[in-house]
Length: 579
Image 1 (cartoon, helix red, strand yellow):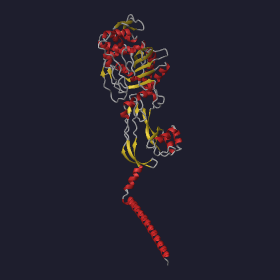
Image 2: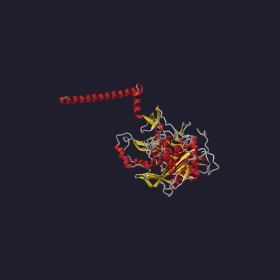
Image 3: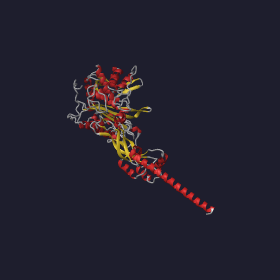
């Protein structure tokens, strides 16, 4: 064999050997890898399976919050005024959702949101894992949204506040924001009491983020506590109906009505016009948010005359037989002149109230001094908080000058130069109605009798009540007679105050009263702002509202009707009848 042939045979053997060596090496490495993988599988599944379990948990187990529903607000008899109902919130994980997903068109249409805005938000927040798409929708709508099966779109349960009585109780109950935090009214004042505490739980989810199984409870949700208000929803409805009717009929700017339980100080009804629907705030006007019965101040006018008269009777310097000469029907104090509607001449103290004589009551005030009248006003709660804890309560103004000018004493006696809210005025009349005891007011139902303190003697309050009875039977409040019940009260007509001072053609018509007058159960204050129909006196505008509301309210409360309606009977002082 030639040298050339030998070289070829050797090369072939060398190539064959290298090929066999490479094959063996690859085969060895492959068998080694298979062995290592096999051992790792055995190790993970048999020897040490905790690793796989932990990795699985990391990818499928999540900690979810458990929403706690807000406490229920009810009236005094358990009728719901504010409840939380379960709803669904649609949200998305932008890191999982493709902004170009065609089904987003249907989702945007279903949720009533802008498709362009939806896609833009998904792009803008692509690095995040959570954005809201539509909060607090009905469960059926959420099911339709999830049925589109768009990657990264999910739903979770939340609660939405609902107000069954709507605008009728809006100013008392108030409302919450979208996160169920109180913003107005009782919802704000008792937010901490009503708010619940969210819980937490571990859950197992699939690759679409849906909960498959609840695993463990970390902390249970604690629901908010319920709250029973003093409001009687039946009385609230009828008060709202009548107030709205008179504001509409007289084309008035607004109105307020407050009703109190004489023997407990509980607020049974509190309504305002205009109002709003807390379930639909799309057309909400800011000026309608205020609970005017508490936040708005006004000069009470002639409704203060019975209280000034009570101060006179309490002083001992005057009695029901005392007379005042009101000639010539006016009084001058420098450039100020106080007038009656006409010259009433000689009046006894009862007729000063019945005829609403400014001259008569101002002469008594001049004789007593401003401090005597102011002291009784203060003891009745004027010029100070009522204590109900309602947000935005206005205290009012009760003047206390170092030295009273005669004109200041005069105007104070018939309710000018001071300011109150409707609730304060009702509280003052409550003292007259219940025999002279001032109870703290409350918007929350009381389970026990409150502790009050005496402000006036029973003798004085009965004498004043007799005057108030005659205001209704033969005086300025004749239109306040509530059907088959006797009543007592006082009219008031005051100029509204504008940016430039008193408005000559704008008035507030007021009536404050109680019924039945022999044994009062309720006190009601009605105030109507700027009536425009031609009538504007308290006896013409506010008194009829008082009559209709009190007649229906007493009937609903099962108060026995009186047979001798319209006859002016003298209320005999009966000391010890009330505590």
